[in-house]
Length: 105
Image (cartoon, rainbow, N blue to C red):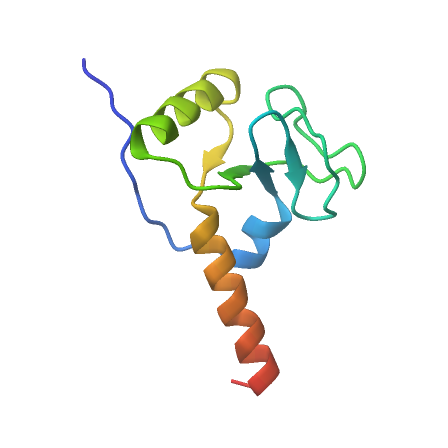
């Protein structure tokens, strides 16, 4: 069987995603709940600072599709429990949510 990574869109509670999100860089990640830095996403299932359980992971910067697939494959090999999300979607939704709160909509 030939297996590939494909994008799937789900409706999620954005606050819940942000609370349980790891934002990954080249070497380490940070907890989006408390902004703790230097987390080894391949080993740590909870934040060493705020003890939040990580359920989602996204990337700090956008890469070309081949690099993204390679990075996702490495993450899923080490942490199949994490759901990969697009941080641009999360950031855009959080910005929209903050604007709605500000303008009372």
